[in-house]
Amino acid sequence: MRKLLSATAVTLAMAAVMVTAGPSLAQQSAAIANPANAYREVKDDNVMVPSLKRTVGQLDDMDVLGPDGTKIGEVEEVLMDASGQPVAVVVDVEHGVGIGDKEVIVGLDQLRDDGRSLTTALSNAQLGTLPIWDD
Image 1 (cartoon, helix red, strand yellow):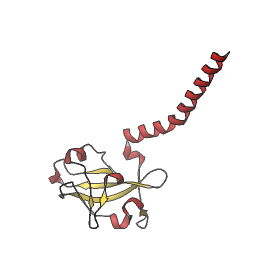
Image 2 (cartoon, helix red, strand yellow):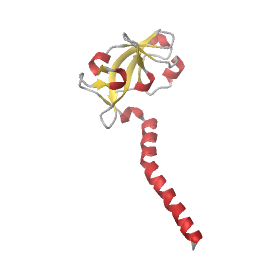
Image 3 (tube, rainbow, N blue to C red):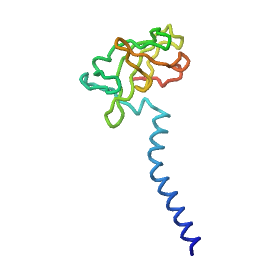
Image 4 (spheres, rainbow, N blue to C red):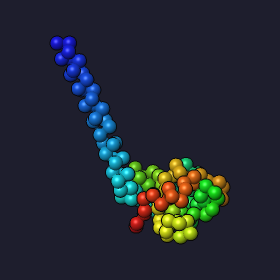
């Protein structure tokens, strides 16, 4: 009887973990598989982007510099997730960076504000692997 109760407890615990983790894992997988569909453009220039302490309007057209201080592009859009929170920007990457002229999605956690521009530690090769924003 004790083995049956232990086995039942383990099964219930595993089911609880799967139920709890299942949707979040699915959301993460969907976001990773097709991140451009997971985001929407922030239309209100007055929305604050807390991690950068700037509004969407202040970020618009702001230069984005690479780790060596070279300009890699500029901010075209600020993107929000399904909950309405700003989570990324679209950077219009300049042709001279070596990955072609395209707009890529850069997470806010990859950017720092130096007071005049945004900087990222992402290399050109890493920028080339980022999801493309195709609006």
